Length: 311
Image (tube, rainbow, N blue to C red; front, side, top):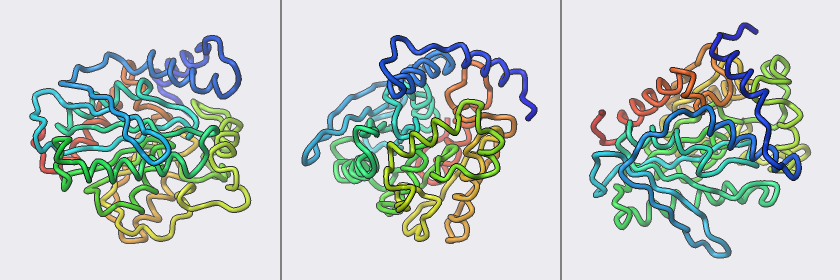
């Protein structure tokens, strides 16, 4: 495993992060992700507006943020629904704020960020249901949101990539495209890339096993394909898809398997292999040029499928 100097710099930094006053391993994981993204994401771009809403459901509310891009009218905007990563157990508005701001400005789309329910407090299918419900809600309320309901895409990273892939099989007819960023597609953790990167960088197998047990407790004996998208056989309604794979990532092989399954099902899929990159490189814009490169590529893909004007 040959790592570039910037990646070595990042890994050295990650090894020094200490979660402040963590109560337990779950709290430690959540605070670690917050600290990592705060320290490595780089300067946050300004956007025109950020709106926070609580979308009422039958028995709970789903918090969302709507990021409006600079220099864009709110009327009839295209939209991108963003589903964050964090092993299904971590992640929040703040962990992905820098990335989402970049996406909004580069795509000229309103980015709708879902603060879905997390495991272990809310195991599968709670988080997935929240994401499906928000896609439907955005489509149904597009006019009042200033959004064109015929111009909606979805992006998910890591665990969010798994959720996005499953969302698309449920309500893909409402979506023009999807982007899956190093998706967590399989709960087996037995691929060659997991053997190579069992102890990192960034992810480790012990943490992955625990996260999957919390998210999908029945997964070891009775896995549900909507929780474990590597098992999906029917990609009905799945829109054209862009998949990012990172070279030095334990999730590399399962991401490639998921992309191949989509291709075999006849879905238009483009896979971009990010050489030298590690899991989570989208949060490392302070050090890596590839972060902006990936944002630019996502924007170009969105512009192919949405009626937007590239900046």
